Image (cartoon, rainbow, N blue to C red):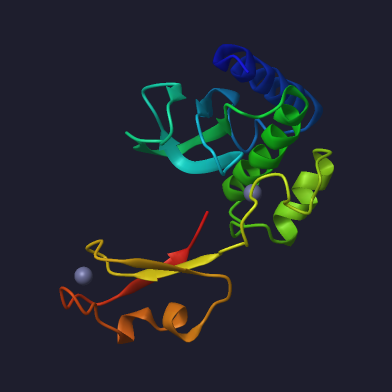
Amino acid sequence: MDKERLKTIAELEIDKLYEEFDIEEEIPRDNIQVVTVGWKCRLGQCLYDAMFFQEHFDSKLYGRIQEEGMYVIALAQRLPAKEVTMTTRHELAHAVVHAMGYPSGHNVYWKRMAKAFGTNPRAKNSRAEPEYKYWYGCPNGCWKKKYIRKVDRVRNASEYTCGSCGSTCESGELE
Ligand SMILES: [Zn+2]
Ligand SMILES: [Zn+2]
């Protein structure tokens, strides 16, 4: 679909949800940015405390700027028109849950919000891959591993060191 058209559909859907739900209280409408990306495997993504200086990306999101309280809803250009609204709701639910201070991911808080927004709370929309929720790796970027469960290495990352550079390992939750 045309990038501008996709973006317009998403923006209108967000406006609609803002009218229907009291979202302004959590996130001012202007703090939501919609961008389109030429992804192959992913349909959508919500980025927290972030913004971009551009609105369209070829295959990768780059140039992210850290900005407290800002949210980016990124949508795949290949999304069929009928899936744009569902994916937008899915990602906006992530943003609102984050703004309310709840943990991120496809947890009960997100499910409740997604259901309220009228989207499929089974999270099928956004990702075709298994749900990796945690990461563990070297803070210097030597390597990074993703986990579905909170395994020992994720819980006790600081007890391990990077084999390449010797730094203390770190871990966290994926968006
Ligand atoms: Zn999601
Ligand atoms: Zn390292």
